[in-house]
Image 1 (cartoon, one colour):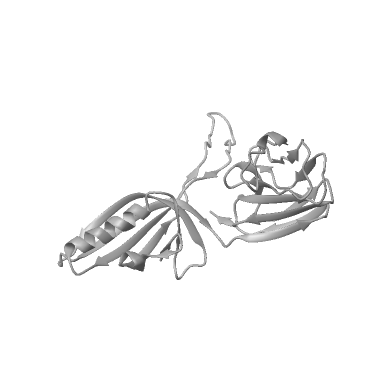
Image 2 (cartoon, rainbow, N blue to C red):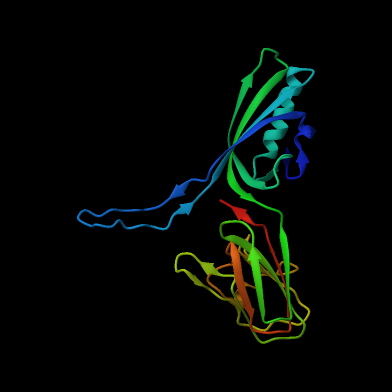
Length: 241
């Protein structure tokens, strides 16, 4: 098991087991009195729960306590968990932890509860100087994506369609730049963080007209670009319910 790429062995911990609880589902379904047909609401999914059990053993009780403290300190923020027997990873946050003392005072079982989501390895797709691109996205739920846009020359504006699916309206919202973009200057539209910046971090959201940040539907996405002198790198990590 790894935490943000760091093995739990660095905390002198041993992995025992991991249990996953499927995502929670929410829907405001209703069957009105007198109606012959129910009103079905769109089902929304929330967090997936992970229960991880670890084992700590050391030469002294104090060392066991220090190792547990160091690991819990590393889990005070959202982290990425990976497991040797699973291809997918999990972006999670710790919500609870509980220890079980053993017969030996120098050994402790620690059970940690996380909430988060499941994702796969990052995919990179190039959309270079073309007006259309068909992208088949992995995963089985909407996945945020990152667009790195570099015009080959100065352009007055830019519209990208096909990366702004809105589940509420069942329609695609365009990503629009309404102010000039400079040739050779990369602009990043980050659907993960909800930012539009230059490579140096300068905020460029004010140059856009957009109601939604870029994301991909699972399966086929037909992307169109209003100009053919633009290089676009699209990056995303497929997500799973």
